[in-house]
Length: 155
Length: 254
Image 1 (cartoon, one colour):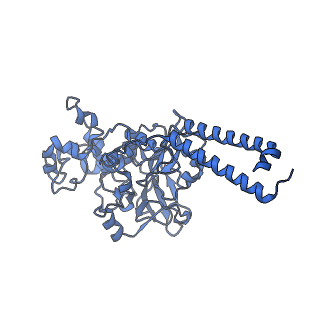
Image 2: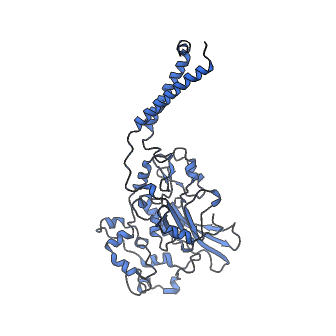
Image 3: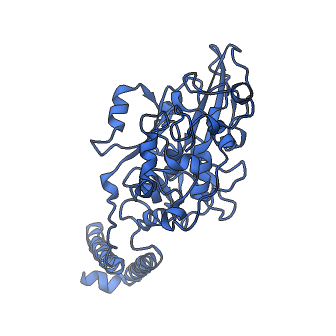
């Protein structure tokens, strides 16, 4: 050790340079890399919260049924029983938050045919019609109830 | 100067250890306290998707719902999820006619005639949320990753827009958002599933062709589905650990 101190000045200078470099790297890394980087893996853990932050547009059927429970009864036993509200009614989270915001009126003819217009490629078991042949221009809802299509009448 | 090799290594080693220890101390000091975890415990979940081709009617509800929920640009180049129509003639699995007009956003205008001797079906596509994802492996900055709950997410504040991941994804699920010039893709509606809601596409699928399941929840119906159906993932030869399980997948689907 004594010999190193006496003869090895140049080595100590290099070692000092290395130490300073490493210290500068660690300090800079500490400043530039967010503290939560690497908590779960090679990424910023806060990105999970960022992804979860976006506002919800579709409220979800549970939220709808909080107020419109009677629709679930209307759907019971029908082939539309498992169709969730917003699949036809559109995104209504704003309406769910503030019932004063009225949902837009729906166009039954367009909505029904989105799924039920006969198209090659749709599973054979799925009910589908040629609207001209099936109804000849008569509105779907004059015969079918959208919430329970097997029954006649409105709603 | 007389310094033998043994003494040199000994001394240099001591200095190295001291430097490393100091670095560690400084790093721990700078890192500070870790933030509080949220109520949703990511590590308790492992999300997967089921896509039942035998139920898909190609209505495009999922595509419209996804774009509305996630502010995806409406142009025909940008999709987090889209639907393809396959038209396969008999045994010619290698040359199917595939089309996806506007990703299925406007539905599928009738193009084929019934009884033309081919089979026609719809295939919904989205990020496969691979457990061993190629897109994650190529990201140079840690901007895309598999979350503890098995969702491939993008950190938009880290993304450079280098497009490596866009090329690496074998399923074509990524695009560069023209507004932010960062990558975007399906995040399984992370803002919804962490609140106990269904992803927008699942919520809006009228036939139940799309389902989400939590593989870490033993009570989740996904286990029964996987037990009772013969499912397949896209491009299994890529060994991506895909978690988008297709029921009734035709061999022609790429």
